Length: 178
Image 1 (cartoon, rainbow, N blue to C red):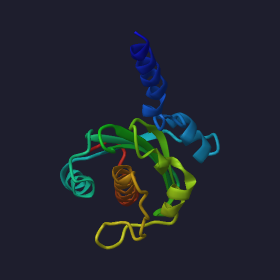
Image 2: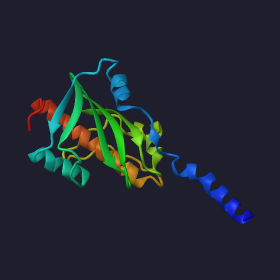
Image 3: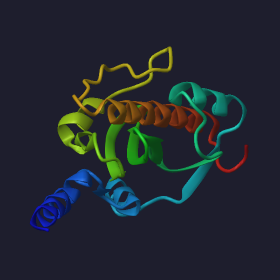
């Protein structure tokens, strides 16, 4: 009986390590408030139909989970709350675009058991100033993190998608129509 008790103790002691990186680091509404100095503009919607849907599919490598994407814009500053699958679960990320350049990217909710290092500034600061090049890819090289390849890929895709959607909404002033 003693060896079984010891094994159970070890197993239960290790369970919290499985959820180490999972968590809500910032609520989306707090992210928006922080990035608009407490005066969050009204949400707008861009519909992913036609060319926008196809372009989102090219950026992500699959269709986006929703046909509508909410965003918040004040002048040339926009904020996006987007999700992309890391390995098995969505990573909820906030992205701020100023004048067509990525100003900030932040992991808000991380649901994976690995790859959580992407939430730290040493990684996310690499995205500052990124734009889309003529091929529609990020114009900056983003260094990976050993053991977090899929999470790194997810954030790169989210950054590119946010920059693309920002460019579309600036050009067409898309509100709610497809």
